Structure formats: structure tokens, C-alpha cells
Picture (cartoon, rainbow, N blue to C red):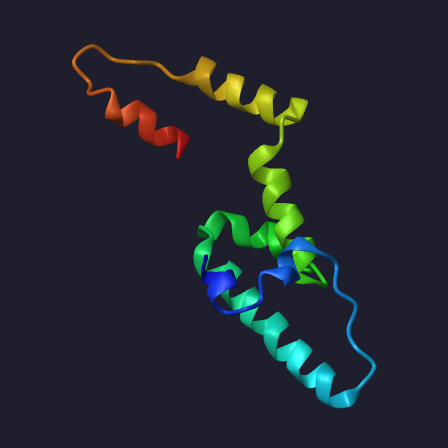
Length: 102
């Protein structure tokens, strides 16, 4: 909604090539930087390294989608391993263990 309100949603939905006109290029770069700032403000700190080096906001968005929608086998294996490694002690609140997955 923030991107839509700022008129820059299309930067995340599509790969936009920079315009050739100098004046339009300036506006394009301003919008691109605005989107990058909004994305970086909206993600948790542990996501930021995955966005480093992305050349476009579209690439940043795809990286976020891949992280969150990833049904990749390595991700599943890592989560299963985390579950196996949890040792619950009698009397400990369950929230102690659930917080390990955030």
C-alpha cells in the first residue's frame, strides 16, 4: 500500500528499464531510490543481507519472495533440524521454544 500511495508500485511488479531521456532518468532514479528505501525500512534486519547487491528494486522484491515463498528442500531440512534440536524442559513455558523460530 505504501508503494501504491507513492506511485511507485510498478518498480516491484515489473523489471523497468531506465529511460534514455536525462530528465526522465533523474525521476526514474529518484523513484527507484524511494522504493529501495521503503523496502529496506519494511523488512527485518536478517533479510537485508539477501538484498545486498541487487541492481533493481524488482530483483530485491524477487529475492524477498524467494525467501518467504521458498519451498526449497534446504529450507525444509533446516527447519526440521531446528525442530529436532529442541529439548523441552519440564516447567518451561512453550513461548521459550516458539521464539526460536522467529
